[in-house]
Image (cartoon, rainbow, N blue to C red; front, side):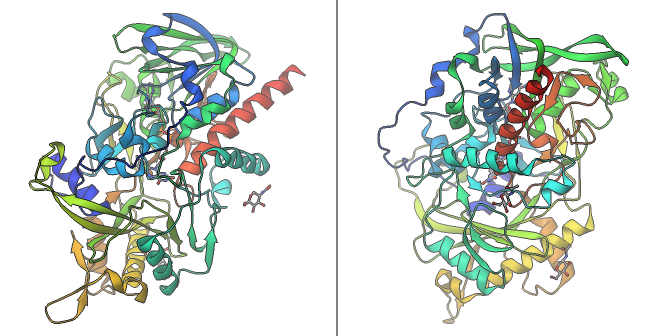
Length: 556
Ligand SMILES: Cc1cc2nc3c(=O)[nH]c(=O)nc-3n(C[C@H](O)[C@H](O)[C@H](O)COP(=O)(O)OP(=O)(O)OC[C@H]3O[C@@H](n4cnc5c(N)ncnc54)[C@H](O)[C@@H]3O)c2cc1C
Ligand SMILES: *[C@@H]1O[C@H](CO)[C@@H](O)[C@H](O)[C@H]1NC(C)=O
Ligand SMILES: *[C@@H]1O[C@H](CO)[C@@H](O)[C@H](O)[C@H]1NC(C)=O
């Protein structure tokens, strides 16, 4: 792929999600006065914390899995959450659906709540750097894992506890979206295109077309994993923000089978650059919930990884674990965007088409101010931009089967690792993309979408595309494959890097190390269902409950 400058690519990739560029000019809608979230009472800026302290569980990363995990464990144990970012609460762009694109447009490498990174494949990407993690910057669609996921993930799931954990999450932060014109048209178009039956509103993964859940409420306000901290026991938990963990501290313990390494704490740095030690009490654990990029990075920086690789960086090897940073996946996103002749609602994903040919179809819409040149989006210009309704239709392939890897760019944890996803390296992924793209073509030809066409000079009705249109001859395999490769983008569902069976066992314990687990999207080797956040939120609650039960058994 040719490599224009990164910012251009980022712009282009977002363009493919919405058609164009947003500016800051539109303020979020007025909100009724909100009560401060209760977790503010036990939240600290890391500079306020002592240079050394002891806890039962130290959770690295206050993200999608980390927050529900911490809230759960705090009912029995003393818990510390260490989050490198700040708080989303009170930030209008993070807290409202309308701010989604602005947050991504303003992503940088080092300070913004959405951290920008570009894979070696040339695709711009992002991850959360804020309490709530990527659930605080995502598109909010919520849908449980597909039933097969539980069989192929290498974990002995207790499905009753799985369901209870989903319900615990859903009671607090999941809402039923209200469909307006674009999302309704997509629902009807999917049904016309044969993605049936219609399953109405459901949080379950069901073949056909459905309305899914959303972590945006009726007023468009975002709810995140951080909201789940309201379930925590305040006297047992501390949540530290601006706390960047640099490595896990390991010590050898002479266990029965000989000498084993065991996690005894972590080293983290606050915003003033001061170092702190958080140490685990007897039977305590360090749990990495730093996400698919952050958790493998921290294992490597702690000396857990492939021996020759660690040695090449001069990192002392604590434990040789060859697959750390391997089996890293990202589901490609492909689709089209159109300008429409009729006004559109602002919608992120609400409807999904679950096909049986390897792809999921989703949609978004927005009213977008076109400003020129594009870079002026960061400047409030007095001249009003031209507002245009732009709608997007996209597909995500299941899997994927193509996998890539992660390697360090630096021994400084603040520098994002280098990742490569090898989109479409496996031909099955390409076939799935072609299938999904053909389905998009079917939806575009449906009667339900005719109002979104413009009348052309000859009196015919046509779509007006922003960016590439689908190939005219959609039966041409070669052209369809070319479209998939040429327009590949990310749907931000990257996962893996510490996969179950390769880096952690079925209880998410790091192989060969005591007192250390990885609980987040990095442990997952296949994307669960249409969108991963439901499963990752559930996972945090689920492992928390499991740990409490395990320890109860030991004491009996
Ligand atoms: C733009 C975007 C849109 C998306 N849309 C959707 C959607 O609509 N629906 C859906 O289901 N999924 C969506 N996703 C995917 C979903 O949000 C993620 O898969 C999920 O949130 C990942 O959860 P996690 O717990 O693995 O990691 P995260 O939630 O990213 O949590 C990791 C946390 O660890 C912290 N951290 C990392 N390193 C360190 C360190 N060294 N020290 C301290 N803290 C550290 C990070 O700051 C972060 O808070 C989207 C993702 C993005 C980025
Ligand atoms: C869990 O929930 C799913 C979907 O809602 C349901 O089909 C399944 O039977 C439930 N499983 C258990 C063990 O309760
Ligand atoms: C693509 O779709 C065709 C027709 O529905 C199907 O037979 C084939 O298995 C699909 N390919 C993949 C990789 O799922």
